Image 1: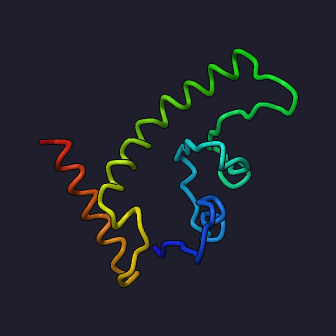
Image 2: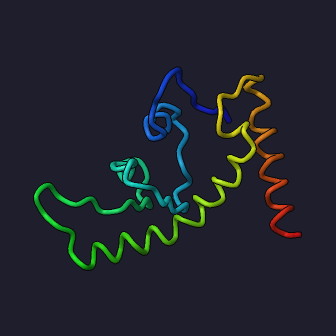
Length: 116
């Protein structure tokens, strides 16, 4: 698997689209509002409902957004823990073919720490 990258600032969603990597059909994707439109690429994606211009969200939409946020916070906390290893939060300067090996090692350390 090749990891998408770009020079300069580029949003994760545009990198995802450019990478041509796709999620499995059974996978549920819980995304933030920056991923609006991912439903066209992956049917089982869930993003929060944006407030319409000049309008308000209904109570049901607000509740659904809050439920989605409470599910996503678990993943965001794991990402935060993984970014403590600076290799995942800064520019990767080594051989790209070894990146996934190093990422898997870091995730292994994290999972080991959770169990013990």
